[in-house]
Image 1 (cartoon, helix red, strand yellow):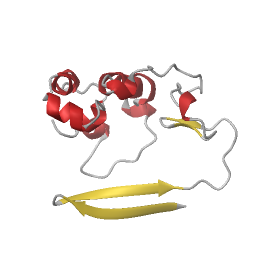
Image 2 (image 1 turned 90 degrees about the horizontal axis):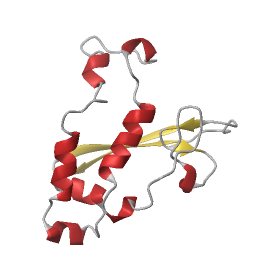
Image 3 (image 1 turned 90 degrees about the vertical axis):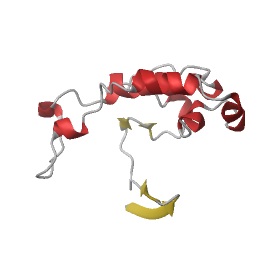
Length: 132
């Protein structure tokens, strides 16, 4: 079952999608972990091998390690490896941001954000990222 909601916030359209799987098959893994209900083991490679989650993600260092985890373990490396069908005006290259050249700039912007923003965000780098 897939439920999609559309909301407007700050004059922007935001989509929220909820996926409900009927019966989870054993060994199902993905970018968001496994269906075992345990968030502490949700970083894994495509074979389901657990990867240690950095202990300080919620204390300000989360952006870059999280991006690198997703890029290094879950980015589709090239078009032949993709299972997607692309619309007539798009292609693999259109969506491929695995080597995003702005990552270092974003990480620096989060690190150098105003202290008041960091305090308001309780040092959560993902919250700070939303402000830069």
